[in-house]
Every structure is written in C-alpha cells, then in structure tokens.
Image (cartoon, rainbow over all chains, first blue to last red; front, side):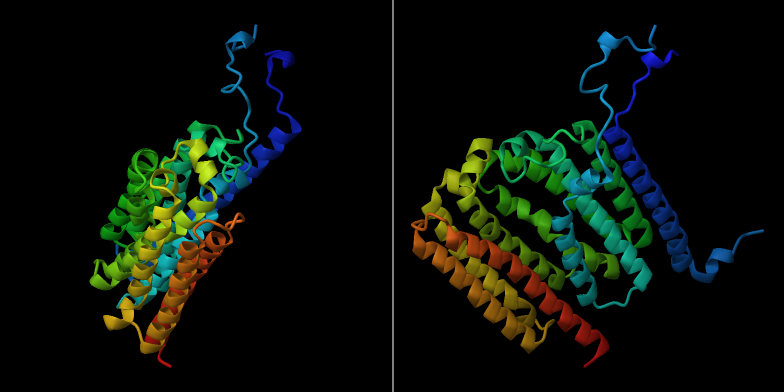
Length: 52
Length: 310
C-alpha cells in the first residue's frame, strides 16, 4: 500500500495511544497478579490437590 | 487505490483517538469512586467476620471498578446533558476526546469484569448486589428517573447507598439490618446533598432539561424538603448506637454532626434564597460532603476499636 494512502497519526494521537497501551499493560499485569494470588488465598494448600 | 476509499471515511469514525489513559480514568468518576470505596470498606470492617485481608482488598477493588463502570455508562448515556452543563461539559465524551461507543464498551466490559471478579473472590450474593447497583445507577437512574421525575436523586440515591451493603455481603455472605442502616444513612443524605447543589446550579439543570426539584417544585419547596431530609439524616446517623452496633462515643459524635447538618439546612431554609451568592446552599453542600465522610470515618474508628480492642 503506498505511503500516501496510510493514515498518519499526529504527535498527539501517538502520545495518547502510548498512554493507553501502558495503562492496558499495567491493568493486565495487575489482573494476572490478582487472579494468581487470589487463587492461592482462596484454595490455600488445596491448590496442589490434583487428581492423578 | 486505497484499501478504504477516502470519501467513505466518516470524519468521526475514521479519526484516530486522542483519548489518553487519563480520559478513561475520568470516565470512572474517581471522586465518586473514592466515596464508594470508603463506604464499602466501612461496611466490611463493621461486619461480624474476619475476612482474608487480600481477598477483602480484591473485593474492594472489584466494588470500585463496578462503581467506575456505572460512571462510564452514565457518561455515555448523559453526554447530551453533560455537554450543556458548565460543570460537566469538559467530561471526556461531551468534550469529544472519547467516542460514545468507546465509553459504552468500556463501561460494559468493566461491569462484567468487576461482578465476575467479586463473585469468584468473595461470593455471588455480593456480586449480585454489585450487578444490581450498576444496573440501578445506569438504567433505572440514568436512563429513566433522571430525565423524568424530580424524585430522580431520591430514588436513584439507592445506587450510591448500596456499597456498604455490598461490602458487608462480601465479608459475611448475607445482608443484615445493620448494613441496611448504613444504606439508610447514605440514602437519606443524598437528597439534601444534591438539592443544595441544584439550588445554586438550577440554571444549568434547566438548560439541560433535567427536572431537578428546584426547577419543578420551586426553590421554596426544595428548601423545606432539604430541611426535612436533614432531620432524618441526623436521626439515621445515631441509629448505629441506638441499635447497639456502635459505641456511645460514636453516637455522641454522630449527634453533634447531625445537629450541625440540621443547622446548615436551617440556614438554607431561613435565607429563603435572598443571598445572591447562594452562600447558605454552598455551605450546606460543602458540609454534607464532610458529614458523610466524618460519619463513616467515625464508624470505621469504632469498628476498628471493636475489632482490635482498645
């Protein structure tokens, strides 16, 4: 696709996209930690009880 | 040839977003969220159970996100009203920084996410109450009551009053009379708080076509109703002591705070709107915020002392 047909983001749009990407990344990391620790706390030692 | 013909690109839809993470945080109404977190936390502390601190923290987080989600749905639906009111015109959707569809998607996603998380980490009664709170605020209040009746914030106040009940339910798995007293305090506090604001912002609400009490029943009637609700708030504030789940020092503090609330509302009633700068109304509005914070802070101290002994 020729360059002139691409939408060129402005400086403000790039900055906003970067800010959103960082926020989404941090939220995902926080969510993974919450689910991991929440599961450990909720199940306790039973988390290792797995039917063979 | 371009993949998408230029003439077919809608100006609004084709535009790349300039919304920052801060705009999406603003959609969550952080100030309202902080009050929700605080009152829900007090509900948890007062509950007769000792939850795992980490699971309690996650529950608080889920309740906060749920409250934020209802705020985002409110801003999506109310963008037309917000655009004509000075206080709300700079919000992300009316200001054009966030597209309405983005706010809707954000709100729906966070609603499902917060309810699911609370259900898995605490219990499904608390999750159901949170889902009901979001539904009540976004659908019953925002889409229906707000534009149709001057009792909008009276009935809609139930949504803002539910967080301590959700917090209590997250810890105990039940809803008790004590948690309903916490609900009652916030429920009765809501009308004088918002009507004090509506008295000095009535022009804004009138332009937006929102039937707030001063615009429909008149300022004099609103002042009388504010006074009646203030007396009821003051009484509800001491109920925790009268019902035996808060101490006498709390009851005395609540009585003093309640008397001050009635005094501020009396000044609003007595001024009869003759103060062109609406100082009595602004003073009541400011004090009402302080009152709710102080009552719940006192309940929190009381609960912590009861838990850990003094």
